[in-house]
Image (cartoon, rainbow, N blue to C red):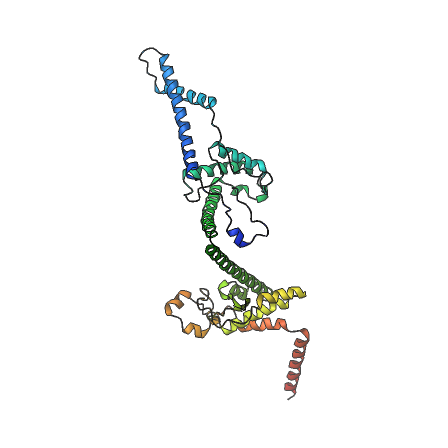
Length: 392
């Protein structure tokens, strides 16, 4: 498709302001493609009419060919016209580079380009502003899919690891249809960004939009890392199929964080979840400690601490977050619960049973922090006190 990869070292701002997707067909390109087919059809039709008149002149006066004779003459005339004046490809402008980085062998791409040129397409492009089922897009898609099939059958796409049972015509069509829909959205975004780059005010707005998008992405990525770390720690302590791990698998119980900027420097703060009970907060904090306490190498310890130690809680709690539907009621803050409307509580359908024994879970995590010596001393102290009680 002639879509360049992001250059190494280029910033997100530079990349956003650069056109990557090929422009849709111009009015002239679209007109030339449509009229090319019409001109070809008219040329063959004229050849058929001329051949039919010549055929009738050779017959006696008043001769009228029947349907079968007429079809035979028209077929022969169309074949002769095609051979005498074969369809010529248009000049193809968007040739793929011979040294381009592609998982496909180069000749598969050039064969596809040749078919597109023969069909009258001057470039490999979709009309991003039109439906996938328009004549231009459907014809382009048909050619691309046919050459994809040739490449696949010749083992030209083995690096993609696609199973034969999945490489069906409906699947291929659906993949390309989705791809076009996604790229059409990207093209509209690209057009807006290129337009913004034309003025200083637009560049500032584009840069602000990029920073906001990066912040959201980084926050989502950071939360996922914390979620994975806590769940992995829970699996080690309680087991894969335990109620504790099932509880930790709900992404809603893990809080977000925010960046607080002060004097051009930023610091992270945790956003407190009002609905979480104090016991659940304690368990999660202990799991965060367990995550880095298991590390042995100083570098790994620092990285683990940096992940889970996100600073103090922000003054304002995150009030727009709710427990997962069907969550354990005893792990929800009673104060928060009493302040909610009945319709919301009905929708949450909180579970009044206690599959997670939170006190035992907290004790189990704290027990894993203790040394063998302290546990042995405690056991010895307990034994001696038991002996004294027996003597008394």
